[in-house]
Image (cartoon, rainbow, N blue to C red; front, top):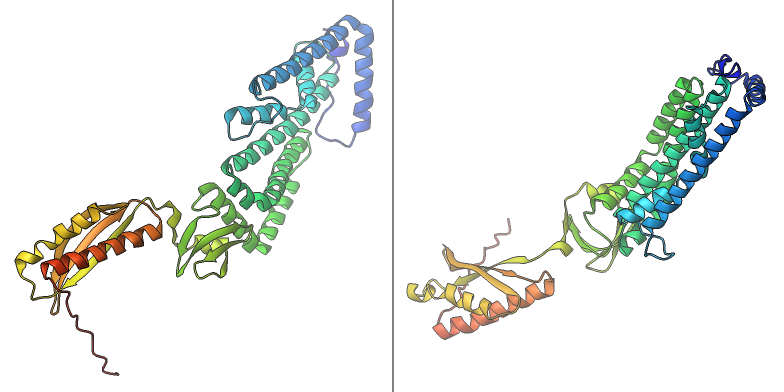
Length: 374
């Protein structure tokens, strides 16, 4: 080890004497190059070689991930596209700092130079880490919003999402860099915490709706175009915004409700119905003989079996009242469309009217409650 390499390392705990440290770094480096030029040349050549190898690896990995895809960028919905994006976001500045830092650990260099390289590597690593984390979060958001409908619904939200991600990621990177440079970041962290609390309290309604929109994006309780039912409202989702959701009700009007209020309610997604269960009750006359009543379940089963998009489940005489014999018929429509269900119901009722008339079975004349005016 040369005499220049044994020079004492200046304390890095403060940045106020940066000019003096820069002058000291230049002096020590110049002395090292003058007294041990061979080692210095080997160090520079090694650093350049390592850097070129890292750049070649970045290029080769990126090319392999895009192999067979032409010039079209890969979507982040696939692992190849995600890996290609992360490799493409690896900065040359970070690769250069990594190469210099690697060589400085194996080459006898002045302490001030090693420290300066370490500081540069720390800063570049923090910046590169922030870039990778930012791309990771944004890629996850884009991966969840994979379809065209979701992209259009979350397009307006992506701007604020990018802003929030950038603020958080780069603030953490800045704190990490300053802390490694010896700056006391306690006051800065406390200030950011107090400021964040104040902003959160002032805009808690906006942030609540924003995070509700993100919950809709990631959890996917419904999408644009789905028919949903909440409370007394049933309609089609037209748009999912940062603060509100627009729904076209069955009666024609547009219903606008905040994201938070909608998610606080029980929501039925009618589009995801795979089959509908229908319960139909017939009220037959009490004068109908038992042997004829026993034929009614078989009539219903036969009518449903010969219908379209319907599957018979059961039919039973379920109750006797003062004015009727109640027959409960249960069946499923294998198509979720509401019109198909109503068509199957109509087919059953018309068929039962013909079958009951053929057997001489009459419908009950049900008693209506008397209105006393009280």
